[in-house]
Image (cartoon, helix red, strand yellow):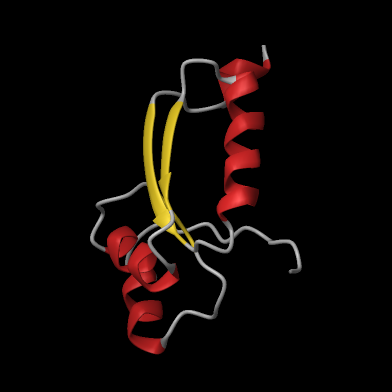
Length: 88
């Protein structure tokens, strides 16, 4: 079944408030497939989301700008997947 390909359970995330509606929609669609998933996305801002992700306090971060050089180096030290985003 499709369900077996998705990680379910608790996920914490932070990031862009501008992406909040899109993130909420993605969470809703994901939870239709993985009904026991609980995803908490806090719109704390792009910079805060990146910092929390680097500090391994959240499972993913949403952001709308290019990552600054220092953060880019730190992101290379952990496993990161960059997903495409929709235009504003």
